[in-house]
Length: 90
Image (cartoon, rainbow, N blue to C red; front, side, top):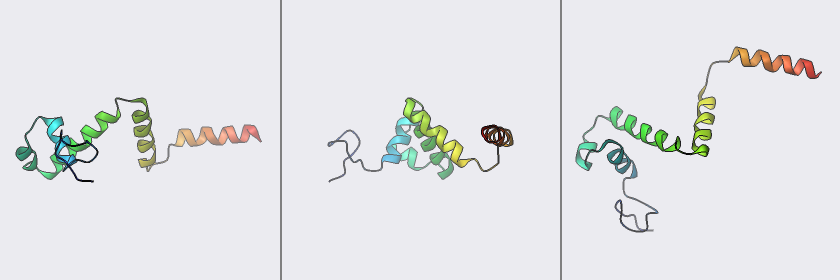
């Protein structure tokens, strides 16, 4: 498959999709997007992807799963309630 520029070709594969996404999200042109600091570029890319995912129910479910899997601290309240439920079943 031959990559294409945004808006050209069959739309299956695009050259530099991250830059295209940041340009669409921020309103910047290609060259200004390339001159952004890396942290700002990545932040805009992340915000664009999250915004797109929040538009659909399946995307919101995916984001909830990601948040749950990234949690590193124990939710003590949920843990205690789960233990109580298990003791009540026994």
